[in-house]
Length: 164
Image (cartoon, rainbow, N blue to C red):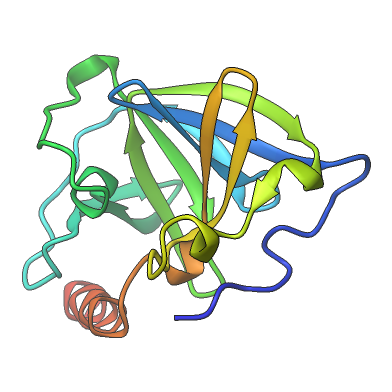
């Protein structure tokens, strides 16, 4: 999958990113894709969905898929309980909810601090860039490349069957 060339376009003096953590590692999404942060809610199963889909939530009357980003990053499975958060974000195709340990806020990162992912980790398609900051690395996600084509089609099929 190709990264959207506008995914890391500067917004003002630098890149505006919503920073979140999983197992102590920081990740980010462009602020233009993030919609809101919710406290963890019950996730309903979504039959015949790809393995990365934990299920769905009802977000103001809209069925919203919840994706297991821990699975995509190779992290151990974790129950979030009432202490987790859902980061709701938009892709070019749909709105998604991502369970995260904590949302750390919005951070501005200088464009010069971001390295293309292929220069560091070739083939990591869901990462739009890696920012080297004084307090560690920040992996900037590309949600449009997060799901494979098969996962995207499987998710669409499962959602259509559920709504039909």
